[in-house]
Length: 215
Image (cartoon, rainbow, N blue to C red):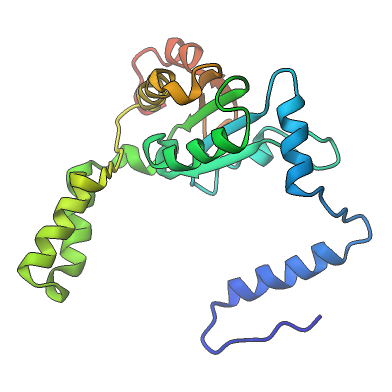
């Protein structure tokens, strides 16, 4: 199937679309079940479903490092945010709770990783870079409003920079455990070593670090 090419479209996007056509045309492609069927099956699982909160970093893809595939039937629901931070994922987690098991069963895995981009900056630096990028385009009032957005304000934005992945993961696990909407779920924290690919429970990773923040 020929893909209609829009002027100035990033050629990488075109390659993705071409790959999609090949993927969908593969004789082994199986039409997935309808949402209602999937929802019913998930609710009937004794241990509920698994939700994985991971980082947006393209080096760290749960479908790959956890060996998921449609053929094995072991796919999980994946949410990805910068730094695998839970706060920006809350709206999605609330929706999943509502359409799933209402937080009464199931598992949430929070998976941070080493060498994360959010380890090399601070919330203050992120705000400065963003505000500097629009300073010439906004009047004073709009600039103040933008600053309030980035500081949290009434929008509740948190940028989530951190020093150690075990600390950010632990903080987010504790936050999720305090929520009444996930009260029946098992909430676990993990850290992936980006260089080796190995994922460990957060406490195990912390013991192995021996104070080496740059691990």
